[in-house]
Amino acid sequence: MDILRSIQTRRSIRKYGEQPVEQEKIERCLEAGRLAPSACNAQPWTFIVVNEPGLKDQVARTARAQTLNMNKFAAQAPAIIAIVEEPANVTSTLGSKIKRKHYPLIDIGIAAENICLQATEEGLGTCMIGWLNEKKAKRLLGVPDSKRIPLLISLGYTTDEWPNSRNRKAFEKIVRYNKY
Ligand SMILES: Cc1cc2nc3c(=O)[nH]c(=O)nc-3n(C[C@H](O)[C@H](O)[C@H](O)COP(=O)(O)O)c2cc1C
Image (tube, rainbow, N blue to C red; front, side):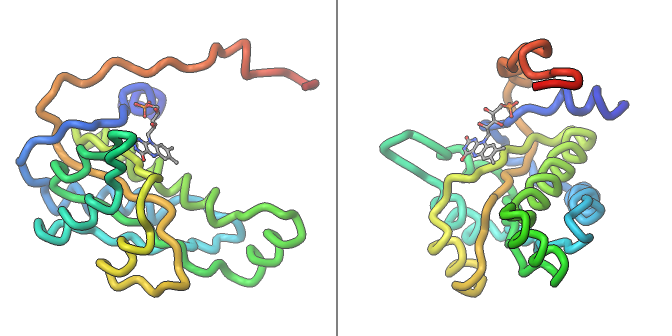
């Protein structure tokens, strides 16, 4: 599969079966995350694979927003990857300050997409989950209070049909050449 094909195939998957995910597949996804580019090569991340069923359910619950009916599916996923934001190196931190841009969040977004694209290649479904109770998730995973968990990624085989693609803005609407 070429890269554009993989990008076109990826969907946010919100229905998972019980089939566990093979360790080698998880590791190839994490390897794709590890190799992601980052500002000043700071690599400001730790990936925590949560696959112990009891703990995974508890972590999934931190993403549940009952009133908005969001993220109930996370508990079905056989694995969740929590991305912890680590302190960036001196140059990236300085760059963030000078340019008023929080590079680590950009870096983590890229690593997360690398993980999701490799998962697609492996025949797995993923969903990035940015709505979570970080305080609770950190307590469950032993992450220091001072750190952040910007994203969880649910991971597993879907039992459903592969969903249709979500709508995207038209190419002409978002692409300009040479001038805004
Ligand atoms: C940073 C980020 C946070 C997200 N958080 C959630 C979330 O908390 N719950 C959820 O169901 N989907 C979440 N999503 C998935 C988006 O809703 C989804 O990517 C978007 O609707 C496009 O659909 P697609 O991924 O199937 O192409 C998130 C995606 C991103 C990139």
